[in-house]
Image 1 (spheres, rainbow, N blue to C red):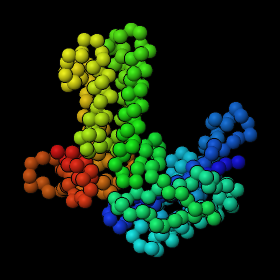
Image 2: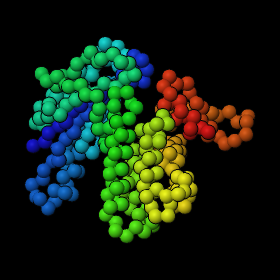
Image 3: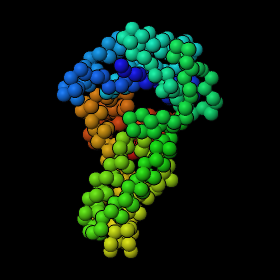
Image 4: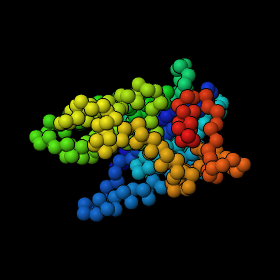
Length: 303
């Protein structure tokens, strides 16, 4: 028996348009023979639910599938779009009854994301159950808030980073600098950089908050307390976290432009094909933006 987790989320790109997303999460499909369950279970499960995307083949609703998650979303600009979303939820509910996959209504959520401070007045229902509105939701390990500031996500990973760094310092009886840095780069830094192109902060306060984990850990190392943070990084052969996030942004930008990932370049960047000036042929045009984070992110990639 499989359960489905459904949640509705709304994303805003302008003052009046929203992107509600419906997420379904399935439990692992059981196989009769336990020895082959770990091999065939995920494959058979994906085959079993693969036809759910056909429900939205003739509509404006988009779908995204990842492992046991499926997300459906569309831009809301009028009242008709709200009814379209509700009809899409009803289709999923009917599909679940047809295939005898009961929806887990207690795990369904409505996440409204917008720059507006007005409360969301639209309600969505799964059968007769109203979806509760939440302020934060964790999506693939990233905590998303209702204004896309990712402040709660940064606070969470900084707290866990300090705890894990202190555990490394206390557990290692030998205070060899090389071993401590290797443990830090293995167990702490990946947690601070997971999906950084999605939530990379713009405010200086959040940048310093993230940097404090590495700054405090390197200051504890023997013989480095009297050095400045930049000199400690140079002595240890590591970069600032802010610089590493910029490298991650540039790497993803390169992959999008050259087609190394399944992301359309036209949806993210505008390439300038004017060759009257010196330089390469892949210059990016900085589009006008009403949100500062979008403007600063494009400005970083083009400079």
